[in-house]
Image 1: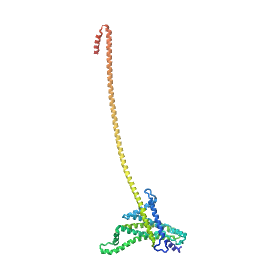
Image 2: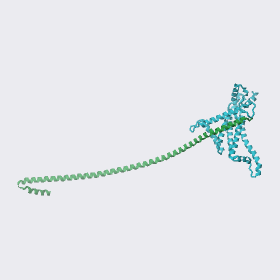
Image 3: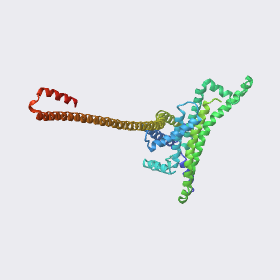
Image 4: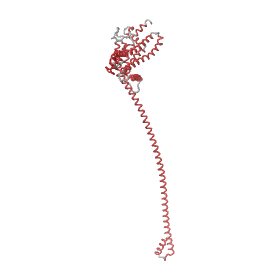
Length: 269
Length: 156
């Protein structure tokens, strides 16, 4: 057991890559397809509820969806004061999609890889070389894809609120103001450096926070799976229960910070 | 940590999901929820209005009832007054009618008395004449005595 424990962990932490050599133009098929499927489940359920929404006597599913929308709407209205048709749907999408991706952690850690291994074996592959990572949010590509999209939204919102000139000017004149032209010239590169750091820190912190939590969670599930079977539930059950909190909290944090960043982008410094 | 095309794929998926939510999920559901909130508010307002209407109607009904009672009392009083008046009138009529009847009867009686007297007088006269006739029989001039008797009759 101990001898192949490293191999077991390694196997679990290897992506199903579209090419053996890797490289930038390769794709993590598992991350991409699972998150796509989860995204379709999200929009499918929500769109069908929206299509069949009843004004009177709503069903349980509709009430559940409505309560989620109410929650997101309340947060957006409290934090984001400008008018926007994008922020609330964006926040809802982030919350639900991230939650679903995180929730893949709740599946037994070996279940889907085992299924994939058997399918691979049936198709004539070596099951030891069939890789599947089921938690898309434990892949930096997934988390950075979202946080960089959010960063683009931040820039877009800033520009649309302040104009290209206003936004560019702010890059060089905030956070340090100076009325003296010479001093302002000296402060401009400092300000620019600060602004760049601020701009870069947002997506990096957003994505790494989510990635770190989910990666750690997944890893601990893998380690628990290495324990003798009698001891697995002793650690597995508390960790899984605690993880319900983590997956929800991380989805919520990602959503809230996105709203906060966007509201900061719209408001003048 | 390895960045590759997955990042682009995920970003595209993300963009599509956000677009879809923005287009087909958020607006219909929030509109519906706003509509429902409005309907509930309207319903509560209508209930409040109904309550006020009911209070007003109850007040009006009470007023009407009181007025009707008052009217009924007035009518009863008027009727009682009228009844006593009718009784009085009937009594009066009866009294005058009685008096009239008594007077009529009296006059009838008087007339009867007169007529009886007249008849009696004639009977007495003829009796006297018959007596005198028997006494005097032949010698007496009938015409002369008749004249005399008439004067005697007038003296009665």
